[in-house]
Image (cartoon, rainbow, N blue to C red; front, side, top):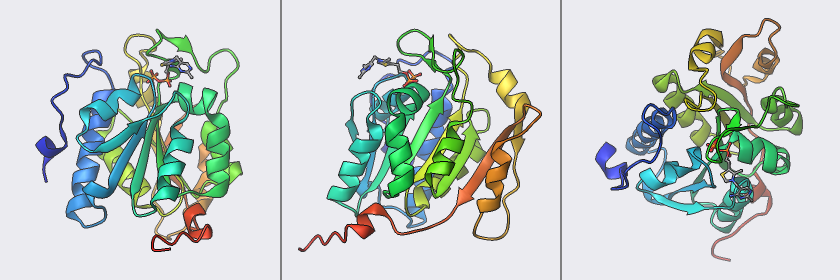
Length: 250
Ligand SMILES: Cc1ncc(C[n+]2csc(CCOP(=O)(O)OP(=O)(O)O)c2C)c(N)n1
């Protein structure tokens, strides 16, 4: 399998230079590598996205998928996973859909641990509807902390300014058994063009040798305005679909 197998004939409607092109390239790289390493079967992989600029990624990815309502990626993905636990279910949403309209779903997915991955393109604006702020008036200062206190087993943050690192985080998130959250920091070049600021604040956190990365969760909070990038927590526990004891035969 190669990049052309994952590419559709759709012409991207993203602005020239949009960070979502990086996310698209990163997920293609991650899926190709996971498939060739035998970690996933691409025919059993499903993308779920909603409405928004980032969500349009599904138009440009030649795999199975489903368009959900805005802010409803997580419950749709959970339904697909519980209906058929053999599928790899990967959600894509913006910070508007995931942290504003769909925040309760993020809290409960963190708590109940369905075996899905949620990738959040965080540009801090509702981009598709012309740049209304999702965070500057009364910000949720750190959505990953909310996922952490709600019990999410896998929490990571990457950046559209580092494609290879982002792609490696995607592979780890998709391979994780249980709920995994990957935030992708990115500028919106039209409504919040702060890519240079993101790149300057970015600080790669070290990947510890021990399998349990839980201690890193403290790194989510930095006092000096730095933006920690990497895996903050990686802990396995029984997934929602395991606990439901789904038996496909019956
Ligand atoms: C239920 C619902 N609420 C609101 C909208 C209008 N709407 C469509 S896209 C969008 C903004 C999306 O912002 P975000 O999720 O951050 O994604 P981005 O466009 O920034 O990638 C909004 C508010 C909608 N389509 N459906």
